[in-house]
Length: 324
Image (tube, rainbow, N blue to C red; front, side, top):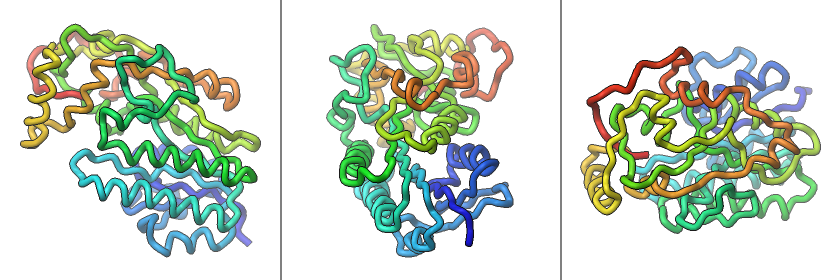
């Protein structure tokens, strides 16, 4: 009989691949993803299928899955909202239902600190008990908040399962293609005139490390996952040699809305809240109970956006513009 396995959904994404390379050294790993996994380790079992399909349940039915890491979450602002909801929410409900039905003893759900939402009245450091207000000003991420809340319900419905929810801050790295990384790669990124919020970044490899630590026996609950510190946005841009373009916020929102509509920008205007308001979190619980400390320094984390560790050149001048 095959030995117990860790099942990872969304394994072909950049973060999933980093996690697979970390876990397969010590665990038997099974992956599910609709996308191919080029260069997968030879001992990795990858199934190319949709987590909402019946074939996904067949993998659980075999009885060798003892831990689930669920990170198959889509976030594409150009996809219709019903497609986000179908894959993210219905997909999450499907895999957690299979996990409960077939006796999976450990469940780890990757959420995001985005669920708190950048708000004018936010505390300096939000704890895991803070309300999830991310969709109030950004309705397009309602499905991400719903996934997090469903995972919380799973904690209470299945006390026999060690369920972990991880909420990492902005994930960056040389292979990451999310909104924060794309914004930080712009030569002339927008800043909201008169605003310079503190921001938190974490290296993709450190998120993989936190996911692996969440598999430890006895670990359960909700954890904010922070990088090596926080800095004003302007300081992050200086470290990257960027020359930000200050835009009055009253102009920025309608302008970015039009640019996004005509596919001249990759971000909807609601993302501008991250350039204006605070959304920093307290990672004390993850350090205390998970034993998590980031391996990358703050400078290494920032520079990983452009794949550099050596000293960078002075700020560049011209280029395109956009917002995170």
